[in-house]
Length: 259
Image (cartoon, rainbow, N blue to C red; front, top):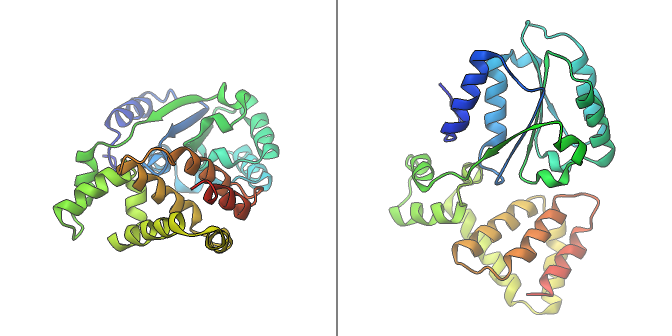
């Protein structure tokens, strides 16, 4: 039995692979952000090998090189070595090239799983060497089932179903319903502020560790209200905010001046 919520077709597919042992050397798990792709990858890995033979890889070159060394060793318990790269779209260019070298010379006991909502950010040579597994957005019934244990009214549950757009991971990370309200109020304040106020808010938000999460909340709120005009600009802001080489303050200022 799988513990990961939803993804029944994907579970059947991987159950068959587990039964036959016909695994690919590398996979790209892609689909909407925060819907459970990494959770699925981790559970799949634990089904085919011991946790000691699973490594989580970061986006920097040092982490990829350490994963390469780890995977060069034989499995400790006779199964597979599995490397999971969450947010693979954040891999630095040097790290992607290092990863490509490993993918070009796969070994029978190694499996790579790249998790991303934006596979286009990966090198084409990496994309071509991986089997692509698309994870669809969760249905409202699945989200409602997830929320049923929370102390929420029916209207709040209906709102969260629309608001989350199937992102169960996002809902799981929420501390309470008030968190959404506070983020929405912050966005409303930004949209109504004058130029000086916008610049002050941009400076403050540029140092906010939760900025990517806030932007995601803002996008989901606007989508739930069918305010599509600003979504494209917010998505561009989100993509810049999650990449450390870009100036968050400048990106925020440019976005706010267009509101």
